[in-house]
Image (cartoon, rainbow, N blue to C red; front, side):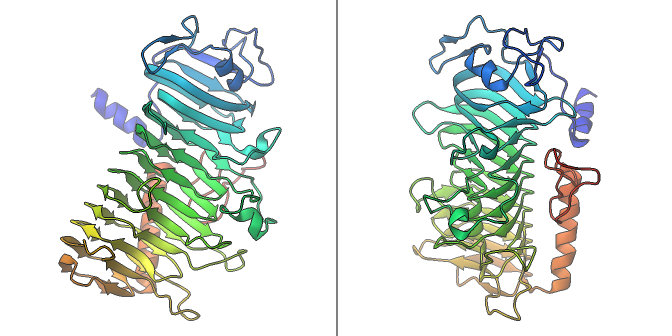
Length: 434
């Protein structure tokens, strides 16, 4: 019975009740002299972290801030206002510490970093370098470790991340993620020496790359990446799951070959990757024909391998490029139930396909079935092939609407902080300037 109730709560978009103590932080009414109670809140999250109020352990198990009142299992509730730039390092917890927006509040950060740490969850925040006193070009949120100290069990969910909210006046140089003088920051980095990383239901807007996913086993689900200048999602580690995400509106501003979703081995480019699942994502080149800097973005472009045991299923892709769904040097992969379409065929010969490539001569044992595309270029690399058919606009629209409904049912039609819809460019009624 308890399991059934918990499942119902999670499906309804709720969260389990906190088991530990609850502390309050309020930039307007709070004070460093407070005790974190509702009546006497602390001032900002950055001050809570920097003043040693969180009791934790370092990587070797030594005590950190042993007199701190906040510990794993507790909850820190943030009220509206600016909470600073937050960097957490060397803070390992035995139970999850939840840092979340108080109901009806929109706390703001200039940056979030949680490195060399364990069991932290961040929920319901607005994060942008444009909110900080001084703009710094860096990834907007970074979870996990690159170095020798491994991180684990770090979650960012229901957050709204953007370089700036309005990038309509940006030039190509400002959009470019390759230009050192550019302004676009990447959204979320899930670092390589880390396990149990989750990015869920975040709205990421006006960025270079949406989410860089390096940690093995990372889960990236229900996110929206809108307006980006490099890649929407990058999978760069083993056994990752990318599902129910919406990636849309690429800005083609430099020499980078932009992808909705791309795969390559972290920090090396080519090299073996295993076990990634890419499921039920929506990839849209652009929504608006008047969008600045349109280009021929590749859809799901998995080129650098060998790529072993990859699953690419039930994705809906709208692009102006040959590469709708492409898996190169795939071994024992499965491409199933995808729909690939282009509405620009009257002006372009870039009709997207489903493709098995063989650059390294290592493709073998793949299954390709029940897909819709303009063409199928499978060579001799599909061990099992069946029921692949030519796409039509009617099929594309049907699958797009069905998947949009499915994603909205899981994560809500409107994002809880940005208040934007996921697929259609609209804002929730009554949602004004925050």
